[in-house]
Image 1 (cartoon, helix red, strand yellow):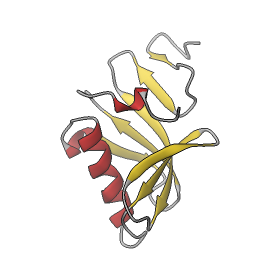
Image 2: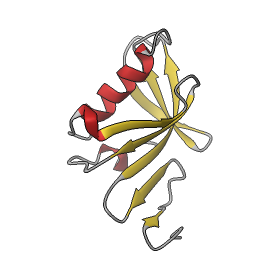
Image 3: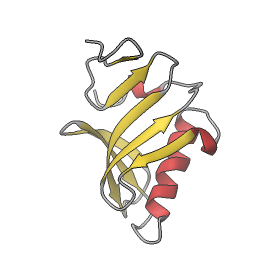
Image 4: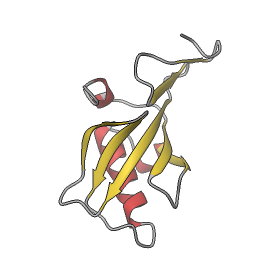
Length: 106
């Protein structure tokens, strides 16, 4: 069901796609993993393991680098909107070229 005329939400509660194609993701980050990867859904968020510790913003940087590479966009197109100091984060991806999110959380 559309939230407004500018935004729509599909069957995945962790992803919001705006009319301009911008994607907003709800992420549950798990820092300190062996490798960075999407591992499924945790509640209403996409769970991503990060191969970086939660020290001095390194896990946030790893998340941004991972999402930028996954969506084939420059790092400047990935913005951490909310959750800088916590595991639950909101991330915006502007002008995504690739759409790996279609296969995530299945």
